[in-house]
Length: 256
Length: 277
Image (cartoon, rainbow over the protein chains, first blue to last red):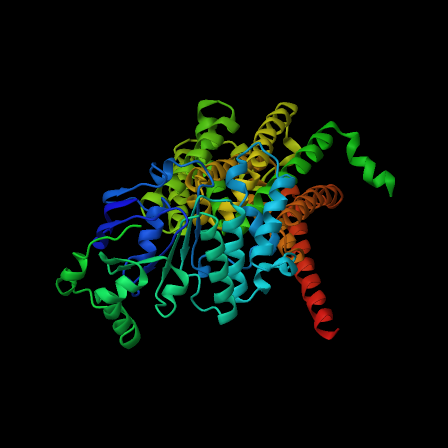
């Protein structure tokens, strides 16, 4: 899926030599400290950034060549203007727009998809509420509901659990596992390592390059996980000392 | 009362003026919804001023002003989009650079003439009473183009206004949609120039939509309310200017300003009542 990927922002190399793949019916956690390239990786897979080297292949195509609605991307919630005149229903309904194109009407099937997405996130009671009146956790759930309403074939989540309460986190985890059980590949960036094994089938540890990839247990044993955990807990971010990670980078990719 | 309402319609030029006012009011305030929500308030002012260069060039060449102003306005709109995206320069800076440059070109060309007609000045302040039958046809045709494209792209414009990044990730071409919107805004401004003039057209783009934004928290009602406010201000302003013998463009914009403050007051009153209950 991602081969020898490098992404550069002007003079800054955000990601280099990244290789990884995700499978249908799998939740892949992307773990790393702040500035490690998690969001860059997701944005590149979503087709929002162009690789400066290497390639991204989603369902045998480059992301920008995919039919509308194929990839659903859930960014961090600060990214939009929450005073925009829209209710929860309106935002979730937007998930249907890419597939409808210019001429198709928003019909019964679309309304059903929106209701279903709201129900999965247990947000039916909030559907008429203006988005500015939602808590941070509810806003995050509305974004995830919009992604589900889209009916994507790949779901990308960028740190959806940041700043949300435990109940919302558990609700999101349950939804992700349901989607994965339904066969959807889910790639999710997170710096929360505590419950990685509850969320993900595999995790990839990155710090501008892939340090390790495998099941949570395998990555835990590789040492890369421990280094991340130590640095995220004690310093807030990991040193970008790639020399010291050479051993982890050489860790063989484990695919199922 | 009825007599006063009907009296202006005895004149053909007033009939054309009312038709133009309604079209301009509805169109400006509908597009104004996107202008407000995408924080493009400065762009209306910018494109309107830039179009002055096109008006002067058309005047000097003896061609239709819609053509001259239209070409310059659309090029400026596309230029703003291009420089903003490719040059990594903030939108307000881009607009500031391009519109002043184009406006200066218009003044430069005008100043090179030994004598210039006051007709050019009428574009600065607008003169809705001078709209000819041919102008009305042109305005109707352009308004139809803007309305049809806006209706077809309604969902794309809405989604990319709220969340352009996610819309792009889900397969929409947010960049192309932004360019189309800029062209639609440019055309709307060209349609409105004769009615309210370069100086005041930005107000008609922004004020009715800003008033509507005070009164609703959903997009489609905001757009409908904005169009209604735009039409009411245009028609009401024209009536007032008829009886007060005032400049039509300025009267329309003043009425819209009053409506905006009434909407702000209405919202504050509603919030105060809600707090008490």
